[in-house]
Length: 314
Ligand SMILES: *[C@@H]1O[C@H](CO)[C@@H](O)[C@H](O)[C@H]1NC(C)=O
Ligand SMILES: *[C@@H]1O[C@H](CO)[C@@H](O)[C@H](O)[C@H]1NC(C)=O
Ligand SMILES: *[C@@H]1O[C@H](CO)[C@@H](O)[C@H](O)[C@H]1NC(C)=O
Image 1: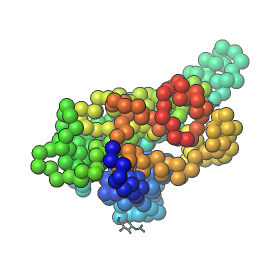
Image 2: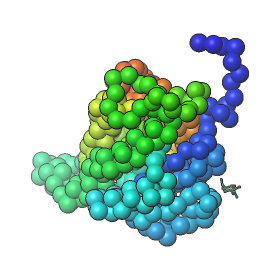
Image 3: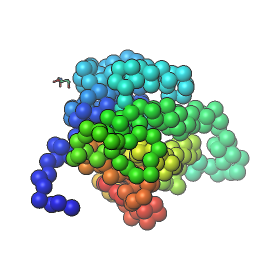
């Protein structure tokens, strides 16, 4: 490593010139990503969500020359295809896909209050349709949306001079014009939850299971997409304010949440700028080195670390 080179944080932690797609970007964490990325020079950000008005408000409040709202239902293949087509026609490639869309599922926290077997059964069996809805958005869509954007992610690699398609070594295409200081390849980032690592039923059984499913799916993607030059990483947030957790606690005992409070905008902004920036170029889920997981700001650090061999950012 040549340590005599200058280090410029604005170059390392920047979204400069990136084209990014965010699902569920109209509120909460997705909106925080959109704001942070748009304000650090992303070229274009497509916000995909069901509620067009929400997306339009997000675009206007941040910067509508950078943010393009696209009405899209991530559980509908036709709707996803239409979004892909739009991005393809307007730009022709993407650098980063952020799978962030989520819906609430059935709550099961009263499971600890059950006094009889039949009460326990009733709690576990309630709202079976809610499980399907939760899985369709929170887990299945991670696969559908990622698959649908693969060709545009591959095109994103081409514009950086990388060879396209399947490869045995990460090399630049012959005669390609590229920035040698930029080693990034295209990337999928999936937002799951710290609950995917927690045996306590913090919200719902479907919540824990669908988030663990999404985490594992993203981990598999890092593995099988490696020969295609596409990275896959996971952000597993702890407590962050969002529409869904509005009215939630603002203080926690430090043995549960070491920071003692929910995360703030800067935590998410810093994390996403690291991951999409040149600083994060080497970060890839399960594809051959250790930095697999980003757990932001919750939980018993040591137990998570021992159980899951995580790299933590608290
Ligand atoms: C919005 O984005 C454009 C294009 O990057 C930029 O030129 C402009 O200054 C931005 N506007 C604001 C208010 O940040
Ligand atoms: C789905 O994901 C969203 C966003 O992370 C989350 O708030 C919601 O509770 C999740 N629902 C289930 C059932 O997992
Ligand atoms: C799991 O969640 C519970 C309830 O929020 C919390 O007390 C506990 O610290 C969490 N454990 C881990 C390992 O994250």
